[in-house]
Each structure stands twice: as C-alpha cells, then as structure tokens.
Image 1 (tube, rainbow, N blue to C red):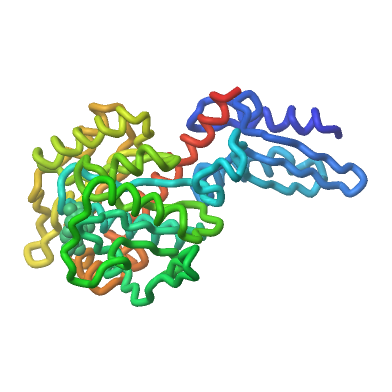
Image 2: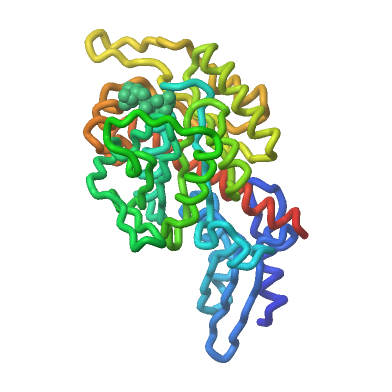
Length: 347
Ligand SMILES: Nc1ncnc2c1ncn2[C@@H]1O[C@H](COP(=O)(O)OP(=O)(O)OP(=O)(O)O)[C@@H](O)[C@H]1O
C-alpha cells in the first residue's frame, strides 16, 4: 500500500454537493502514509465543523480505507492564500451574517438559535450582536457578565459556551444610541478586531435590519463565508428580503439560504394550523433566486419566552426546537459547500 493506492481509494468518495469525487475536486489536501507505524494521515479541505454532510464525507473516507489495515487519522483545513498576519480574523473558520430586510421578523432570534444550535452540536461559536440600533442579543441569552479589557484587547463574556460581543455592552442599558456612519464603521471594525475571539468554528453576526451603514461596513471589511436571510411569509417582508439579497449580490457575498420565520401558528386551543402571514413565501423567494431554502419556524409563544428569559428554544425539546435544528444543520452544510467550492475552484 502506498500513497497513490490510498489516493485511488479516496477517488471513490463523492462530494454529494459538488457532484464529483473528492480527489478530482481537490478536497484531499494531503496524504501522509507511515507504513512502518501502520498509519495514514489524510488532510481534507473540509471547512464547516459539525456539518452533517462534511461528517458523512469524513465517514466515507474512513470506510474507503477500512480494509487497508491502516490506522486512519483525519484532519480538516481549508488552505488560505493569506498568511495569518494578513487575515482579518485568522482564528475564525466561518463568519456568517444573519440579515433581514424588514425589522421584527425574528432575525436576532434566528441568530441566537443558530449560534446556540451550532454550539450544541459541538462547534466553537462566537455571537456578535452588530445591531447598533437595537442590540438585544445579551438579553436573549441572559448574559449578565460584561466584557473585560486590559486596555488593548477585549475578552468577550461567555454564555451557553458562546463568546459574546454586543453594542449593548458599550452603552448604558436604556441609552438611545445615535451612531453616525463613520462611527459605526469605526466601532464595528474595532470590536471585531480587538476582541479576543480565539479559535472559532463559526462567528455569527446579527446585523441590523435593512441595508445601511453597518451592513456595508461588515460586507466590506469582514471575510464573510455567507449570509442567512430571515423573512416572514408576508409580501412586505419578502420584498424587503429581496432588497437585502441585492445588497449581498452587489458585494459578491454568498447567500447560504433563506429561513422563514413565523411560518404559521398551531393553535393550542382549537388544534388548527393558521397561516397568519401567508404561506410558502420564503420557499418561493428561495426558488426565484435559485438559493437554498433553510427551513421554517412556526409562530410559537415559547420562542418569545425563550428569548425573553434568555434560554434559546433550540436547546429545548419539541417541534419548534427541531425546526431550528434543521436550519442550523442546513446553514453548516451550506457553509461547507462554500468552503469546498472555494478550494475546488482555486485549482
Ligand atoms: N417564531 C416565533 N414565535 C413567536 N415569537 C417570535 C418568533 N420569532 C420571533 N419572535 C419574537 O418576536 C420579537 C421580534 O423578534 P426579533 O427581535 O428576533 O426580531 P428582529 O428581526 O431581530 O427584530 P429587529 O428588527 O428589532 O432587529 C421578539 O420578541 C421574539 O421573541
């Protein structure tokens, strides 16, 4: 058995999203066979930790090498052309922005549950509340601790294993905040760069609603893996979501998909299912723009109480928690597609 035998076996493993085998696609970075020790180390260009698809690619690699009698060690990394010094967030594998066109559609709720859900899967996650005009993430995860600083770097507080940063930490609790464009730019770049995020698999950014200065700053300064667009099924929300899509398109930002919130209400009294904001809008929007549909979350009072009490619903049991878990897994899977596509296109 030599390295080219190993490579030949790996050529039987298919990438289900990119539709070719992992060797031809360049998803195999490196093979290091130590015959004497009976081990083979395979480095794979997998970029979305805990994504179900990437986990199953890794399983297929192990299966393909199962009867070689070798001990198989796998590692995952996406090769980067930039050195660590040149990267904006060198320790962060994926930066994912959660956006909405319209306010009040459940964008922060989605960002919090996405972050908590990824962390629950085992990933190292940061949550940045970039909603300068209405930061409410700290309340949604009952963060009582404030960040600490030595004057140079900022150590983010942790809650549910999430590293947190919010504009709310910089202002008094009920202070109305009036930030002008250049101030927003300065504060966002500073907060992202001066915070000790450490090694993270995912940094989730909760953007303010709409298409203003903060969104532009983030699109221009951060290496986003992609954006998640949250909408409700009603027409006004869908129209505004389309504007958001245009903004991301203009800045060549990948859109990981569309999540629909408030997709109907199951009435606990009559048992009926009521489509309060209409139905199918998020799915249709995704289809119109040839984007993935990530899933839908119903209107459920426990989502709001979870937010108010600081216990993200995704960490509970039940249908609504499961609906968020589907979105979490689809986001991770689609972040993986973006990362692997980058590697295979760069060849
Ligand atoms: N699926 C849901 N079921 C019940 N309540 C929900 C649901 N989604 C969100 N909410 C509630 O609706 C309110 C608005 O949600 P959220 O703050 O997440 O929206 P947003 O889009 O981030 O708003 P903003 O425009 O202020 O940034 C919150 O009180 C939240 O708990």
